[in-house]
Image (cartoon, rainbow, N blue to C red; front, side, top):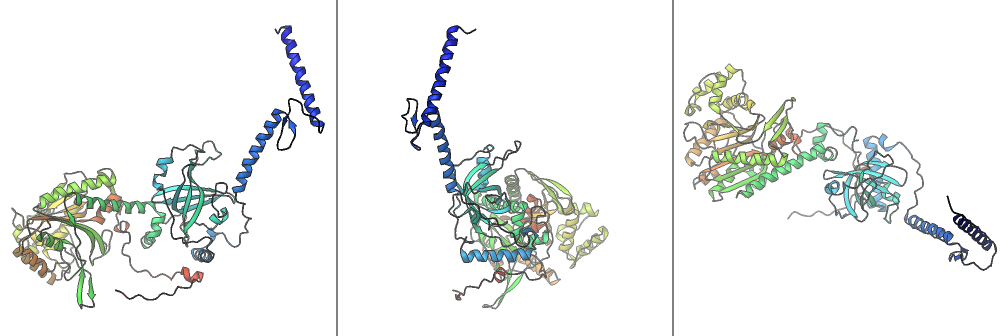
Length: 626
């Protein structure tokens, strides 16, 4: 219980507070009266007020000042627009194209904005954005880090006139751009920066990283770039497909690869994997002492493989030339010249049918190594492919799905299985085959015809020994090769450029590597006997005379080079497209070629942007070719 002294003291304090309050009210009511000792001067109004009142006024003035500064930099909201005509999403592609083309023409004329600027400085790689700023929490920003990026718009959402959300992507990185009038630092009004942007446009954005702060407590916010300035870099004149329906039609995807890449991430990933495969092959050979060479594409005689070439005509020389079908012969001529380790990565051209695994032009790699044989080539093949698969896929176990939905689980680890051709065919046919040195005879031709009839196989004419053996190998051996497998022991009659087998007459030192029933590598101990090589070419000429358009031609220039001495050499050719198919799980070669060969299509002509917008061509003077 409080003492009488404490009660008296509290009563005294209360009386004093009442007295002070009365004096304060009296002073404020008497204009011109002198202020008491408890009054402070408000320099803004000239009044004398209490200390607490003065602090309250100063605090409010500071808030008003900050608000005024924000309002000074804030751009006024645009006047509401009246929508005329149908919404853009309701337009058909031609209508959209015409409206958009005219809009871009107006931008060109007014330069507000310039729709095709010469340059935009990008100082940040968006592929690093998630890793570097993913730790930001809901509502956090890094305003001290201003970055400049460029990307394509995939989706646009608006929330009133002063807020835009853009879903953008570039180089596989997908990110959100949040643009608000309040954060804009550009001299261009907010509406003029954003109202002309559409899906598909390329934009440049300058801003800072942050994470949005949605109202819902369970929403962690979206990692975003908060735009301070937005610039149109290149407008898209066409409607891009909606995210809901996508762009899935195979025929259209192959004919419009640019749109396929815009809409389908898997297509982009496939071509990046292809680039990694090519880079790995090139680095492997470079690191192992090989030199990359370039050989002619236009040749008098296209040799080095069993295939029909394309032909063209040189007007000035009045010569018929062929596009190369392989790089083998010129590369081996370089080995004759003393370049003992050479390879070439490049395009080959073969005038053959188009199917799931063949295209008239394709990419191969061939290498030739002096003083090596087919067994060294096997070891190098296993080493190269195993390393490539691990580098590209991250594992030696991959999956491949066929056209019919069969799924193969492939193990690329070495050592690979090896199958001898003739014993495997004897097992499949149930009969002993003629000796290797008799496989080129007419008697063998009759035997092979009987084996085809016995096993129910049909071979397309001409029924040469080579074609019939190849048909049986395809049906009885290749069909069993799921994991990487070497097929060895080919007859010499099938291999005009391979060296004879050192212990089995009539056969040669050659292998073909198969995966998922398809060939990926063809290799030999190279034939380096010029006498034998001429006889092999003459046999090929006989097959061509029988109607085999794919038989090889007799190349006198190559034979002459061999007469100067080709050292013992091993080499191979690898189909790069096939490797990409297996490592990206595509059964069609068209999926792994950036621009596959397509048949002509009969479609109505489409409107041209310049014609729709009425753009006049700029006159140009012709420049003569030098």
